[in-house]
Image 1 (cartoon, rainbow, N blue to C red):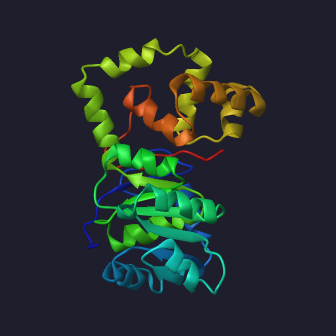
Image 2: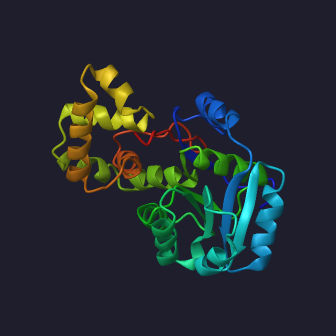
Length: 256
């Protein structure tokens, strides 16, 4: 994890901001509480040692580490973790087990490659962040802090891929998006969501109630066949409803 690590996208409270988090995200990092307890789950002792060295003195407390969830449990005398870092190579079953056993913890997976299907599967299994192992130390620390504060992070190359996919299809994705029976109000909500707006902000912008926003969002999830706001944003980029402003930018979406 050297100084030239890959760019990552942050699902936070701002808009696409090239190369760095939005000002509001920086403000959140400023409120980060030192001593955030962390579990490291990776089958390779050398990788775990490297991660511990990278995070040393950065506000994280590695309270347990091991090659499996059971091994980490056996070493976790210090209590439950705030953050769990898991090697994607261990598989989705391990990720799901971590989520089931630690439902309140934030979970980040480390992966060799930014494969869209793996990213979607990881978020579906409970991940809050998907980072490449080529990430730089500074970006790793920043990303873990953001995830710990409630944001979601994934590689910037994903939106590059989605943009290229739309271009290579010659607008076919837009055609398919047009076949989904979305109302103008639902499209407005999707665009606001992809701009990082909370339900309250969307309600204020559209002069409707938060309850109405939630009803529309539930309908959108059903119509486009996804299960959460992250997948709505990815779908919106892939189908041309919104466009990323620069391949190295940071995507912004609030959980609620």
